[in-house]
Length: 184
Image 1 (tube, rainbow, N blue to C red):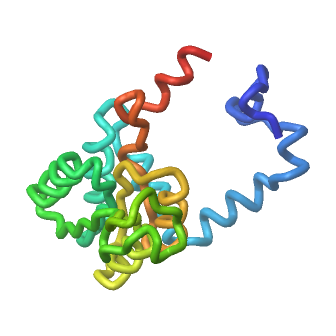
Image 2 (cartoon, one colour):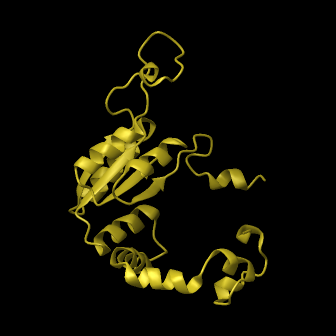
Image 3 (tube, one colour):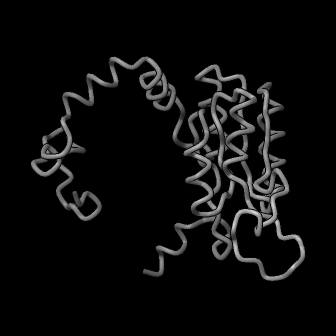
């Protein structure tokens, strides 16, 4: 599959793509959506959110459309201020919000086998712990805020609730990774 470099994009006009049909059965996808109420609910709620609003508002509207009551925010310690703003923004909308910092549990890097730069305590991120805490709090959706590459994957892997990413960490480009593409 090479959709990113396809010039035709027949599929976006509702036409069958010869290359895609080898890997993906359109009819089975449709049936799967129609059979799974949870997946269909996600699709419907997503489709009903306006696309001309900021991502934070889009996430909030999605939460409201899904009648979600308990939301988790897993954030990087480097984006603590942003985590606080998101937490309060959602809470002010009447949503029950729980937030967990990446360094939760106070694990030293050496304890998990990560090379240390000195003998003093060096905090290790704990994405498994973030997922575990939010699982125990029975969140219905979790929001990733600036988690490191790899840590975001582990958080998603261990989260029992669906995960959406609100902020992607990119220290060089003010957390806007698309900026790096402009120079390629």
